[in-house]
Amino acid sequence: MDSINSHSHIEKNQTPPPFHRTNLFYPSKQWFFLPPFFLFFFAFVLLSSGSYSLPLIDRDEPRFAEAARGMLQKKDFIVPFFNGEFRLDKPPLIYWLMAFFYQLFGVNEFSARLPSILSASILATILYSISNGYCSPIRWVAPIGFIVSVQTLIHGRLATADMVLVLFGTLSQWAFLNLLKKKSPLWFFIFWISLALGFLAKGPIIWFIALITYLLHRFVFWRKPLPIANIAPIPGSLLCLAIVSCWAIPALIETKGLFFKIGIGEHIIHRGIEAFDNRPFIPFYYFLSSLVSLYPNSAFFVFFFETLKKNWSMENSFLLSWFLAPILIFSFYATELPHYIMPGFPAYFLLIAQGIGEAKHTRFSFLFALFFLGLFTILALSLIFFCLYQGWPQGTSLKDIPILGGLVLLFLSLFGFTLLSCIKNRSISMPFAFIMALLAALLASSFSFLSKDLRFLSLTIRLSAMFKNMPATSINCAWGYTEPSLVFYSNRNWRWDTALPTSPKPPFFLIQLEEETSLGKGLMQSFEKTKQPQKKQEKAIASPPLSLPSALKNQDNLGEGKIEGLNLGRMSWSKIFYHYHY
Image 1 (tube, rainbow, N blue to C red):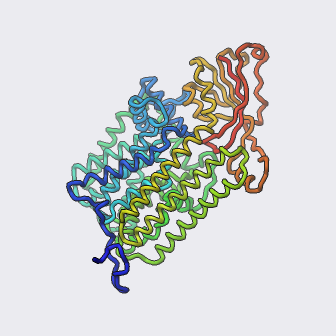
Image 2: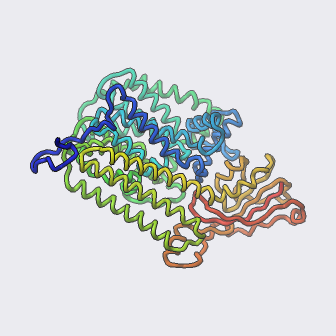
């Protein structure tokens, strides 16, 4: 019997068969619900691994997590607070979701990350459903490619609003595309409600993405009239604004307009004009960053162009516009961060899935994929072996982090090679599926070990043992080491880099950074075989050393000492003085 998986039966000038549908991914109709369930379970397990032990990473995660806890404590679900002040840079949806899971599972890291984990898992099933219409023969490629990509593996497990935005952005674009083909009340409500919820997740960026997508699709790529009346702009806009206004009006009243002034004026407009934290502007930044963000699927970038060249259609014109819209918007934005363009990534996976499903591929597409995957494999192996055989400034425990990071990169590369083999053989056989499952398990294990190591090394976690007996009235001050994680893990407000009161009365907790070493600098110094790395002094260290008033020096129960650990936000090794009196 001829085997559909073998190229030996294909004549020289014969077109290769389409991508083979196997029973593993294409069950009978009565089992149609199994693939979406499998994808949801696969994504949830992979993204949950280590999320319960990984400490909140400065600086965004603790701010989101603490603001959500503050809503529960204050019973105020309109205006979020952090460290005793308004937190007006993000709308409240992410805080509501975190607060909901806090009520179910308690206040912890996993509860704070569940909105992102669930959003990414649901998004995988949505991509599978969309693929049914546009790349049905290999509809599993888009969702699995999305799950096993660098940016999803990062932001799909972080306690931030980004993955929630991507979820509603994808829903709105899917509905938009369907409305451009046929008028439908269901898609009308999905489109406008998704735009409203996307705004409540991260502001008006979701509206701009939808608008730029339409303009690119209509006037640049497809250039044909579109039934824009199908989206019912006037009633739809009223519905969207009505949903947003249920929160926005009370928030504006309670903050006397500050939510608009700070949330829109400073965090959107100002960051677009002036780079955040004085970040340098890098030309073609998003082209370069997407090669890493989409890895290992960026190795199939040529399939992206092959799809557009061979299968130009209204749908693919829309997908191209969708992918480019965030890139176009943020290319004119002064602040450049790799996750800003994530709302366009689902379109990329849908397009490469079509390209992978083609019956014939160019030799260049395979050579490019091999070169790209090979390059990152060499990089991963070099990092692993270097850390194994070179010394490390802070001892053996710290070097486990780059080793585990190298293993994650290696497993992603092997996942890409496995997928490339499936493309070459034009089938998904049980051995290939087993290899993918094994690599996913290894990825999950690596994330779990990495999370435990980071928790063990985290400076804030090491300090948190001293926070257990901290009274609610404690005066807490920090100089140099001013990380938001202190607020979350102490559940107390802190003063950053402020003058110490003349005669502080107990209880109090005081912290000052003594010295800090960048891990990147430490890595380079290890490469140069330097025994002791040169310390990088922070600006905060330039201030006089912490000196307690003489009135306190003779008091009993005054604890003080030094402690060192990893600053997760800056990825640096920090040493601090601490003084406390409860």
